Image 1 (spheres, rainbow, N blue to C red):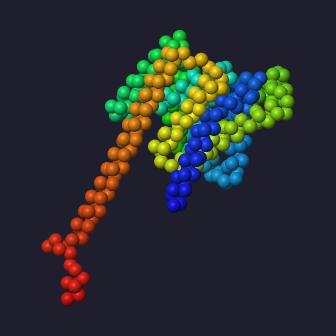
Image 2: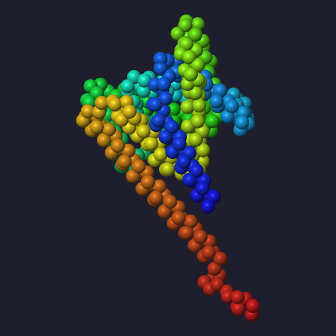
Image 3: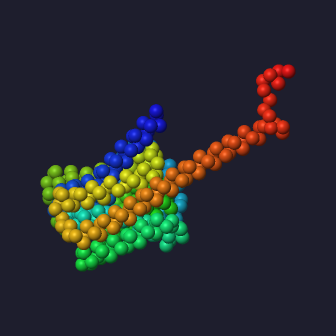
Length: 329
C-alpha cells in the first residue's frame, strides 16, 4: 500500500511540475514592461535566494566543497549555466513577443533532438522505430519552415539548447536542487551586475514599476525553483517511462495557451507540421513502452530460470527429494 501511495504522490508531483512549466506563459507577460534580459537576470538572482533557503532547510552543504575540488565538473556546471541562460532568455522573449506556439514546438521536438544528439555525439544505436521518428521530425521541420517562410529558429534553438543542457547535466550527475544552486551561483554575479547597471542608467523597472511589479519580479525565483523541486520529488517515486510520458504535458499546455488564450495563428501548413511532430512522438512513445514491456518480461524469465536452476541444484543425484517419512526412518 505504501508503494502505491508513493507512486500516486510521485505522479501528482510530476503532473504539478510539468503543469507549472506548461502554464508559465501566463506569468511572463505580467512582468512587462520589463524586457526579456531584465526578467532573465531577476530570475537568476532570485532563484539563487530561493534555492539557498531550500538548501538551508534540508542542510545539504557537503557537496559544495566536493564540487570546488573538481575543476572539470565546475566547467560542466558553467557550460550548463550558459546553455540554460540561452534557453530561458529566448523562451521569455518568445512568450512576450507572441511566439508561444513556436516555443511549444521546441519542447515537442526536444526528445527527437536528444535522440539525434545521442547518435551523433555518444555513438548510440537507434531502433528502427526511433529512426522513423527522427526522420518524421526532420520532415516536420521542413514543412514548418515552408509554412513560416523561414526555419522555425525559436523552436530549434530551444530544442537544441535544452537537449545540450540535459546532456551536460547527465555528465555532471548532481541532484536537481544542488545543480540548480551551482548553476545560479555561476550566473548570480553577472546577472546582479547587469541589474545594477540598468539601475545606474535609470532603465531598471524593479522599483519604477511599483511595489507589485517588484514582487512579481522577485517571484521569478519561486517560478523557477518550485517546479524543479516537484520534478525531483516525482523522479524518485515514479518510473522513468512515466516521467517520459508526463514531459509532453508542458508543450501541450503551451500549445493550447498559444491558440486559445493568446490567439496565435495556425494556418494549415503549421497544423501539418505539428501533426508530423506528434506522429513522431507517438512512434517514440509506442517504441519506448514496447521496449520497456520486453525488458520486464525478459527480467521475469531470467528470474524464473535462476530460481529453477537454484531449486535443481538442491535435488539429490537420484532426482528424488527425500520425504519427511524417509528422513525419519
